[in-house]
Image (cartoon, rainbow, N blue to C red; front, side, top):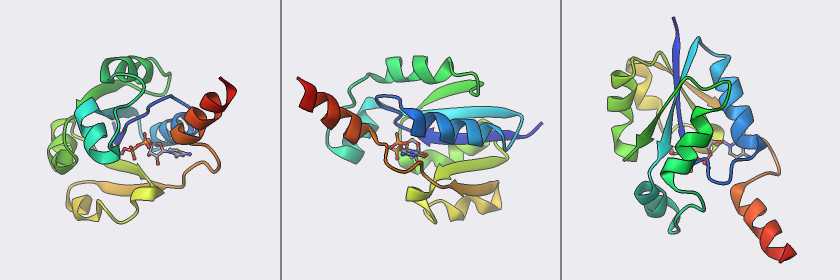
Length: 131
Ligand code: C2G
């Protein structure tokens, strides 16, 4: 049984999010997803997500490729989360390339290419332009 873990805010869910999760799941038998808390998202991006951490967790937990979700409270706790969920593989989008290589002593670290031309910010701007 190979457990894969990945992390993200996953605000305003779009196909880029879905693809990275589906590809992550293909790397093992079980996919655990850490969804950034509202406070962590604010610290990273200086704005609160459109959808709350409860709504984002509910959406991610109900995707076919996802087995378990939890709230990621801090970027500094990656090692603890990998150990807590007994993850064999840590997957991150390649916007984080190299950032988690220090965890290679406890799990395989994989960076997947992002889906081009789609982002939460672009979706928000597109909707804002329609109203
Ligand atoms: N993603 C992607 N293609 C896109 C947009 C996002 O593959 N066009 C991926 C990101 O690379 C990431 C995941 O979707 O793996 C979630 O993206 P974000 O919600 O932007 O995640 P981020 O805020 O970078 O949070 O601990 C790490 C953080 O929680 C990551």
